[in-house]
Length: 326
Image 1: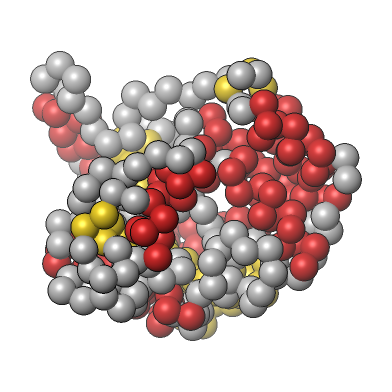
Image 2: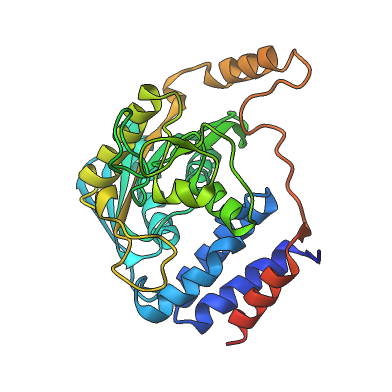
C-alpha cells in the first residue's frame, strides 16, 4: 500500500476538485478537510468521498462556484447560506463573525444552511476550540434510523460533536460521534469489502437484527443506547434542519449519489466563551490529570496521533490522481 504525504493528498484533491468545476477557495477548503481526516485515520471522511464530490460538481448536485452569504439577524446569531455549495467554505466564511460575536456576548450560534454534507463534524468544532471557545456542533443526514419499536426511517445518523479548549491554545477534549451505534459509512465500507457487521448495529427492513450490511442499508441503523440515542438524534435533527431552515433527514437523498437534488443539509454550532470562568483552564487541566491517572485512560480526543505520510489504497490513489488529471 503506497505511502502518500499529506501535502500531496491536499494538493491532488484540490486539483481534482478544480478540474471538475470548483473555484479555488472551495477546492482549497475541502482539500484541507480531506487532509485532516486522512491524517488521523478517519478514512470515511477523507479520500473516500472525493470521487462523489467530483461527480456531483459535474452534475450540479453541489456548486463549486457559489459564494456563501453571511448574515447576523441577532447580535449573537450568525447565519450562513451555503447556496447548495460545500459546507467547508461556508463555515470558513461564518466562523470569524461567530467568534467575534461570542467574544462580545459570551455565547453565539452559527447556523450553516443549504449546504453539502460536512462529512466530519468534529473538524469544525475543533477549529472553534483552537480559537479558544467551546464548540458544540450538530448536523443531519439521509434517513437511515427508525424510532425504537418502529421500522420507518425518520432521521439520519445525525452526528453531534463537542470540542473544548485547554486554555493554552490547544484542545483539551473532543468527541465526534453519530447518534447511532455506528456511522453509516462503516456499514457501506463493510458491504464494499464483502464483510459482515456485528449484531446490534442495524435492523433489516422487517425490523429484525441483522449482520448483513446490504440488509442493514435496506433496513435501519440502531440508535446508540436505544431511546437515549434516539433523543439525541432528534435534537440534532431539530437544530440542523428546523433551526437552519434546511432539509429534514427524511427528504435527503443518498449522499454519494452522483446526480439528484442538492443535499441542502444544515449544520448548527454553539460557541461558548469559557473566559467567563476565571479558572476554566485550571479545572480542565485538573479533570484531564484525574482521568489520566489510570493507565490507558484519557480525555476523548487526547493523544491522537497525526500520521504523515499515510497509507492509501493503490486503487484509491490511482482514482484520485486520475480525477486530478481529468
